[in-house]
Length: 167
Image 1: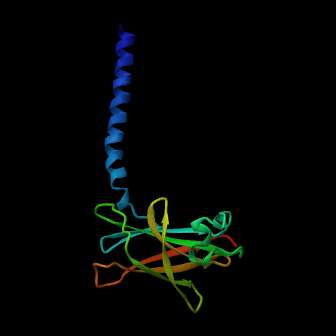
Image 2 (image 1 turned 180 degrees about the vertical axis):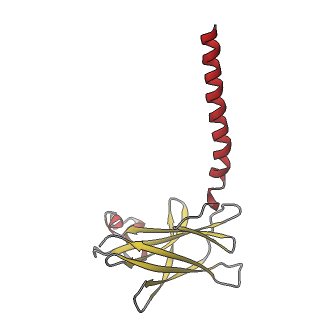
Image 3 (image 1 turned 120 degrees about the horizontal axis):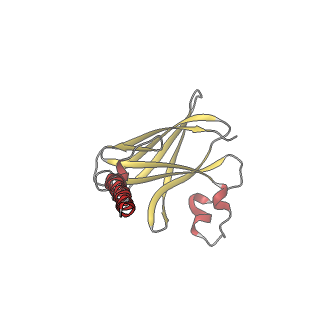
C-alpha cells in the first residue's frame, strides 16, 4: 500500500509538473509571434521574419512549378540566395498579406549598396515576399526592408544584420 501511495505521489508530482510546464509553455506558444531574435523584428506593431535560403533549393522544381519561375527563376550561380520576409500583425499574430516590400543590402565595411523590390509569393496558402540576391563569401550584411502597408502613410523599416558564413 505504501508502494502504491508512493507511485501515486510520484505520478501526481509528475502530472503536476507536466501541467505546470504546459501552462507556462502554452502562452509562449500562443504568443510566439512576439518572440524576437536576430532573424525577427517588431516595428510599428508589425512582426517581420527574415529568411535566407540557398537558391539551389528551388532549382530542383520542374519548370511547371510556380517556385521554379518566381522572381524570374533561380540560377545555378554559386552565391545566389533566396531572401524572404514574412509579415504578421504583432498583436494578433495574423499574417499580413498586402504590402509593398523592397530591400537595401550593404556589405558591412564595403561601399555601395543594392536596392531590390521583393515579389509577393504564395507558398502553402500563405503570402511572403522574396527575391534572389548574391552573398559572395563570408561577410556581414546590413539588410533593411522597407514595407509599405496600404493603411499606413509611413514606410516601416526592418533592419537586420546578416552574417553570411559560407563562401
